[in-house]
Image: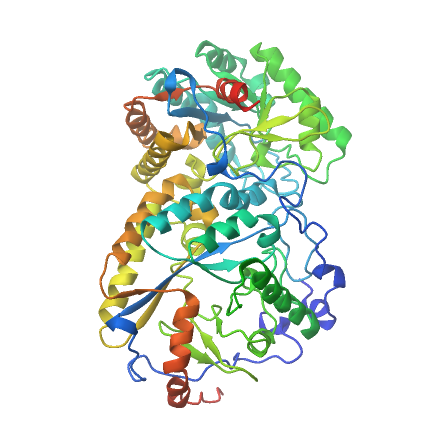
Length: 313
Length: 316
């Protein structure tokens, strides 16, 4: 069904990357002998109460107005974000904000609070209730340009990273973000190290972002308890730290303030975050810093080492 | 899903237009407001945390229509779904009395959210709530009368009026608070509730503290009544253990209690479903969490109206 929605052509494979076995590839050395490049990606989002409907996906589970789900997300901006921010500050961890850029207009105070801490902003589309499916190339370019312009206007930052709004795509998405000057994407989940993304123009890197560590998946799909989430985070880190002695790994914790900022979830998360940041050989980075370091030092070598994928029968 | 049509032509241009992209919210029901920037609240007796326990007395009709969706706890099998009907009713016959006992041990008053149908069917239960000093809050007609965008305003007005009339008559209380069944509203609900003279509403889960909502008549106060940390979500939906539920209540309290030292008074809401937490193997989780919370100095166990009045006295 997924492939049937992709126009104009349908393919069995997205064709974004070559095969590259984890145990046989160029060795990554992160700055200062770090084993793990660690980044935290808070999704700072705005969901609309009554947006126009995309034919491929309804914005809300319930008919409009979905007061329950709308207000659940709104909790993040009013309340949860501020608790999450305090935890990040206490752990000396900068965020790489996955931003619905309309937040710059709706809640500039949140943007300023992130900017004041030296956080990076990358794009998570305009609103989390406007999906890319069904857009033609001109429309999708308009959305990407909106992100570039809005982030620059409100933060002075050049837009480097992309996580599609609500993880919705067209077959053109990767080509367009690369063509428009972005350097990394968070939408591909095939690796624990960065990797080149094949695009028509530009240099694009897939940065490990992780749905496994994402609080939405952990809490709203896998339905785990907060203390268990803390355990999951520590176990993930321990293994990547161990393996990072051979070749540098990447660990990301994607967050949503409306979930992680709930009081009953805060302490277990803070304990896990402090555990990671308390390690010596960890590079506490932003998405842009990791992507740029990789692009400068390893993108070409990884591209050259890639093995052509065989044609499935 | 008609995916072919979706991919055949581009999205209409208004899909990329954002008429409500502006400072603040994308609607006019309440103002954008950040919790840490608000004036700190002081509770009576210099309390740090107001504990607000809110069990729901629900009736799920056996022949539920489930319009426009099935609420949590709805009938599931082909008619007659005796197993789910009777298990929900267990809460009103047995489970609620275990909660009553657990709260009475610490002199904690509850605000009980009541379907009007429960008051009519089991008036003795409402009298027992009264004798515990509990507040009665309206929870609609029953769990098969969901307020939603497809209702006419007249029908919804009639449902609200009938709900309030029944609950006021059976309980003898003023009934100042409203919780919509399944927290489902139409675009008219808040106006209708304001018109009906209600003081507070519990459907919006976007804050840890009360805040003002605008209606066509009098303002309403949104009270923090969580759907996230409640017994149904954690025990039934998430399949966590009883001890996990206890720990999450305690962890929630600890964060709020710590915040209250510097940020002003906080509210710890505990919303409960007697058919869930009132089971023999589960009730101790609530008892243990309450014992932990009540062992702290500066905890004020109060009803929704008491918390509302204390907040409103300082907010205006």
